[in-house]
Structures are given as structure tokens and as C-alpha cells.
Length: 440
Image 1 (cartoon, rainbow, N blue to C red):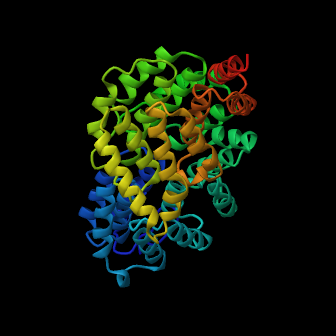
Image 2 (spheres, rainbow, N blue to C red):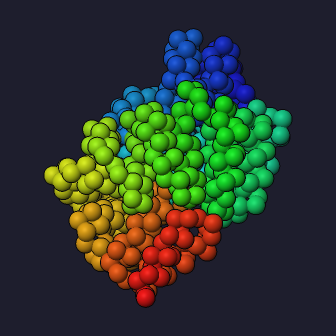
């Protein structure tokens, strides 16, 4: 029986197809390369290769794009579980749950599965992507820690799992160990997305924007290529370093030339330009017609039912683009989702709907109402999904709203909190100076 590079039997695969699957697994887990093209090659070589179809389903399910998730549901519905081995059956169970937005259940299946198959990189990557939707990236640290003792450092894919571990450590606040792991992973997998992405988070969260820019500049030929499916998100991180240094014109230039120009109109990718432009406009940058040009790219990428993270960002785009009817319709769907008994309903009820309503208050200049809406939900911010750095958009808006509402106690408290985490940020210094001016 044909096996992959980690020793897993691949049902229905020839030796040649197994070699192609290895390439596809690397592309999938590194976010580097054309996974779909490789899977098509594997299926052409071995039409009954079960792992090829499962990986294709995972690509669709973790896109966080409503139309693609629907395709994942259709794909898994036609799969024959009886022709799969035990590992593949676990993947089918998990991806079927994920395609129904039952992320917690899907992750639970994968976590149990990876205790028996700790070398399963597809399982690790799928679980990490589901962590994203649930605001649980920190879980990757425990998951990787359970698996790494089963690996050797010369085993194919070792550095990929090491990068997952490093990123999980960063999201857990263990920045020293995270940096060590991610630097090692980046040397071993220089073209990988996750090591570069993880390091950008470490440098962001430890308030080192100068080092962040230097790191990214020195390695740009490795991450800024068409093969990197998520290079726009790394440009987004670089833009945040420039923002922290007060270089908003540079950040706006990156928005125009690297982010908006190259963003893939797929699911969560669309959140990158929205999140950056929202920040830059609050800092005084003139948006021109950028919101109006961004809004059409969002069509069908958020539906108010499958992703709190995407739905909040779509609503923000609609508000700033002047598409109020689209905003109201979207919010109504989000409220309906919040009222359902689905697994995802609490995330909408406790976080997504209140934040979306508060963003409208902010846009309308009702800053005190925005503060009143955002301040109580900070404890549930993880329900939004994404990383700590991405969710900071809400705290950023809250801090600015407190200043504009002329609430000196709130504004100064929030600014102090931000400065404690990143004392060299000119943005945070700006927040404190504005708050102090209110008290005069």
C-alpha cells in the first residue's frame, strides 16, 4: 500500500499519486503552492485516492467563504466512508462538521484523531484553521506539544509543525519561546507562510515595529511571491508596523499597491484591506473612494451566518462605503443567527451583533453609544475569531470612541492599557495624549 511521507497509508493511491499528495500536503500546510493543481494531478494518477478528495474538501471548508463552504458540503456528501481507512474516516467526520460551521465539534474530532495520528500534518493544519474561526489559536500550542515528541527534527514536515507550535505559543503570550521556535522553523522552511506569519505576530505583540520591518524586508523574497497564498496578510502585518511608527502614508501606499491590488476575494482574505483602511481613516488618512471600490469585492463573501469575523468586517465596509441598506440587511441576518440554537449562535449573540451595532454608532458619530456597546463585550472578544492582533481592531475603535465621546477616564484607562503592552507605539502614545487633553 502506498504511504505518504509521514508513513500514513493512502487508500486508493498509487506510489506516484502518494508522491504528489506529499507535495500537496506541503503546499496546504505551508500555504505555499497550488494545492488544487497538485490534487488534480494526484486524482488523474489515482482517481480513487481518498486523501485527495478529503484535502479538496478541507480547502473549501476552511476558506471561510460561504459559497466555497457550500461546495465542501456537497463534496463530502458524495464520499463513501466505507472505502476509507480509519485516518481518512476521521477526516471525513471532521470536515463534514466543519462544512456545517460546527467548528467546536470538528476541532474536537481532530484533537482526538491527532492523539493517534500525531504526524498527520493535514489534521494539524485543519485544526489550526478552525482555531482561527473560534479565536482559539492558542490551542495550537497544546496540540503541537502533544505531537512533537513523536517527531524527529529530520522528518519531512517537522519544521511545519514547529511553526504551528510557535504560533500557538505566541497567541498564548509565551513570546520568548515562540520567537525561538519560529526563527528555527523559518530557517528550515524559508518559503513557508506560517513561520513568517508567526514571527510578525511576535514582533507586533512585543512592540518591536522597527525589528518587524527589518525582519520582513530581509526575507521579502521568501514570502512575497505569487506562490504564497497568504502574502497579502503578511503585507498587512508589515503595514501595522509602519502604522505603529506613525508612518501612515507608507501604510496607505502598501494598502494601495500590495494589499488591495493583490487581495484574493475569498472569505477572510477580504478582512485585510478592511481592517487596515479602518485604522488608517481613524488616524486621519483620507480614504477617497477606496471604500466604494472595496465594497463590491465583498459580495457573497459574508452571509451573516457562518463567520462572525467576516461578518463584522463586511458590515464595517458597508458602513464606510455608504451602503446602509446592505449593512441593515446583513445585521438582520446576524440577529437571526444569534437567535437560533446553532453552535455558532452564542458568538453572534454575545459578540458579533453588539460589535456590528457599535460600529454603526461609531460611523454615525454616536461615540458614547459606541463605547457603551463595545466596553462590555471585551471579555467575549475571542468569540470574534482571528488572532489577538486582528481582534485589536475592536479595542482600537473603542479607545478612539472614548476620546471622541469626551470620556477622559475611559479614554485614559484604555490608552494606558495599550501603552503597557506596546510602549513604543506612536499610535498608543497618540491615544494617551488625546485622553490627557480631555482632562485639562
